[in-house]
Image (cartoon, rainbow, N blue to C red; front, side, top):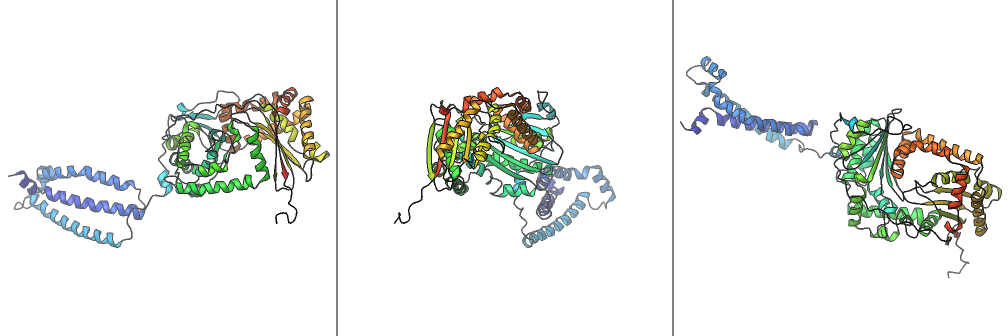
Length: 571
């Protein structure tokens, strides 16, 4: 007997046909269950794998069935006038008829039922992944080396260079993430100024998986909130959310850093948004207008001269290639530092960051900013006129970077000069002599030497030159005569109170840890700050004033109310 005839005699062909029809019906039912009942999408794949794996075994069993113990036993029990193979064939014929009817019913049902196609996966389903715990994570976590640093803080660096710092704090069931990207105004040049700030916008406007606008929708649905800011030195992304949203927030963050969609239509829309922001903050705001011109005048060589929001001609001219190149270079994991604080463990954060950020490739480090601003050789002055009710007087002095020894004494000195109603400049210029309506100041503490910046609002009709002279004389007194111990004690108390107030919240902890890691090179130095504040002396403040508040080191800018045209002059 030929092999073909023997296969037919032993019902192998019938078994194969019945198996295929039954498998198709089962697969169809699984697909219906997935789409209508919400079974996981992998169910149909698993079922198909098992059916395919079982097919050869089923055929083999059909071939040898009549000589198996069960087959031999049935051959004895049944009517000997009909072989066991014949009886099995009859059963297969019946099964085949039933399956044929069921297949017809399934075809009709497939036409009559609502759309049985698998629904599109939601954006959240597209970006979430299985996060596996890491049993050996403790071996990969770095402990603090400084005795003043809280022992529960941990840090680690992924293989792609992403540095992560974790400070567990379970006082409330909330978590904060700060992601510091080393991309700011200093990383730009004529032609692409404003790109760092532009990407702060783009990072909320969709990825390959999450449509524009859904980032906020998904985070808020999980109970979270977010924000971001851009400076001369960094762009920082902030998330605040309940512990229950850990997976959602890490998935959203990892997705936008890995798969940001730089869609031309969205780019043009956001270009318009940035123009509108520039008009409201600078072009139509007298403080912003003068502030922009001050930085452009104080710096001749260093890119701190560029406005963070960008020059108008550059905002108009960014190209798709500019955008893609900037994102690829600066939004690399090895150019970022992530800080996580709150109700979370370091092991959990390690697992989440490895899952959602671990596959993002590192890039070549951005080019270093090698330009050093040359020493200023004389006072720089300018005046602009604009529609205004009151004059503005701004003064800027070149100072140090975040790590410069002069920076901390100068911060304390500015506290004495302008912080609060009892400060020196407020008492003299506002309260006693009424030369100014308000006075304030700040010091920029970045990667490169910045400015000690003063801003005064003057009463209408003020003699601006007289106010400037009095103001500079008061700064000169700080350099020639110094400050008192009582003034220094007050400044210390204010700085320490502000420091500990920040350190009492998980948001403040994340901000402070990140700033010290990024600008000082080591987050552990944060915990030396109270001791360093206590060590500053009156002599240190006087020396800082003498070093910084020199006339040759000053840039003076004035905004004057534009003279009104006489009635009928324009006719």
